[in-house]
Length: 97
Image 1 (spheres, rainbow, N blue to C red):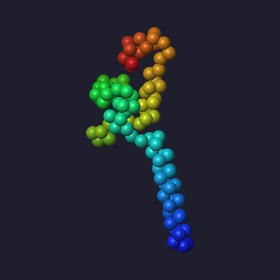
Image 2 (image 1 turned 120 degrees about the vertical axis):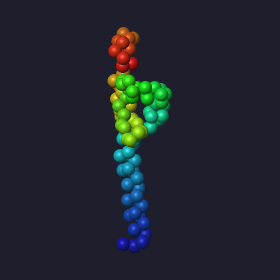
Image 3 (image 1 turned 180 degrees about the vertical axis):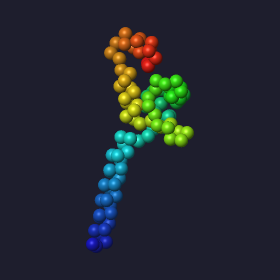
Image 4 (image 1 turned 90 degrees about the vertical axis):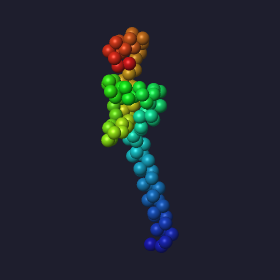
């Protein structure tokens, strides 16, 4: 193998690794509490309250840190959809809105 072939091979291997790594982590990247709050349109304090009282999105505890996946945030949003104000009132009475 010539030096040019080695450079070409290592460059394409690095490019593939970078592309594969990006696709693997894009769907499961962990968001901080601040990032998750911004994504949802709430404050970090609101998320902290929901972790204490329940009703918020699922999270991952890593030591003292809480992290969220975008998939869990999207699932939580999806679970709180309503089609009319009657459903919204019921959700509020049941404590999940």
